[in-house]
Amino acid sequence: MKFLKYSVASIVGMIICTHSFADEIINDDFCSENFNIQAPLRHTQIIIDSALISPESEGEAASSKNQFWRQRVINLMDASKDSNRSKWAPREPVSISIAEADGSGLKLVFSGCMPFYSQAERKKLSSATSSFSKFIGTDWERKHQKVISSFRSGAITAMKMAALDQSQPKKNSSFTKAGLGQAMARGFIAPEDASSRIIILTDLTKYSFDTTSVISARAAGKEQADNWGADLGFSEVHLLGAGGSTENSDKEYLKALFLGAKGNIITMAGINGALPLKKTPVSSSLYRGLINFPTRTRKSGVELPISLRLTLDKSSKAINSWVVVQRQQEESVPLTGTLTCLDTCRFIDSGDFAQIWSDSPGGEPEYDGVPFGGMRDISFSITDGTLQGSITDPTARIAGKGSKQGLDFKMELISQKDAS
Picture (tube, rainbow, N blue to C red):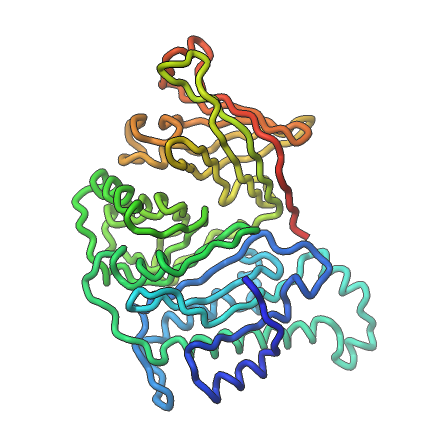
């Protein structure tokens, strides 16, 4: 995402004069490119479902129906709140887009970087602050409050713009064929050089889900993902708009649908649902290599390309990490667990790995038609940039493997980034 060099005041003035919905608020005063530091490891895209929006016209009073989603976005991005500090990385790029009601794409209305300093930067700035600058009100904290206020004002203006000239959404449409689903399929682009987080504000009661059970819903979600056309680029997804009336089978349908589009739903809650705390990335590493898969014709198996994106938080827990293998088609599985480093770094899986693709999560393991044979355990060690390990399962048996069960892999470090 490119951040253009304009002041917030000039952009806001331009939009108020022209009120063109094609324009956007750009607040880049706090982006990493203005500092000699490492670029943030994660980008966040907030997508507002046009089905939430009550259309407004310029000169008319704001609709009370729009207050709840506007306030939710402002609260999410309010850098003056200490509670938000753990939800965002310092200078994390963020954009706000409207999913067009006709499904034509995502309309960008705001872009910028969260005005947070790192703890080390705050300490350095404080140590360089004189008593005199504090006395006359020119210290860094006073200046920072102005930056935060400017950022918030830009977001508020963008939220006002969002409802202008909006068309009415279709009613009772299926998720993939309605405005939100089509807009994401046509307009979503994941960042190429950073971990991707998507926050979706919607109302699932506005969509029809023809689901009767969890098993059939998940099967339908995976099948429809192929025809949906969305590529979420290995994103973590937080879907805010699943109220208490949302059926469990509908939720499982969406989890399977997004998984098939390379998105892992982490949060599914009401519009005011909380985001996971202390889950900001501090390091991101990409490994590539080969994994041995058994075949009926070759006793030694076949070597297939495999990659692993390992993104860790400050507790060394994997967040938005993925394992991808290229078979007849690409297969991907989100990775959860903890990396512990002493003399050697070892990763311990904390989930059921490939069973995230099962039609019956939490039930009996499903092996057929599931990536990596449905195996539930992955472990590996990292030494001097070489990652080596195996994918196994206590009850699965691989023909031709004998006593040494599992899919063995070896990868080399391609790139590594650490947060500033």
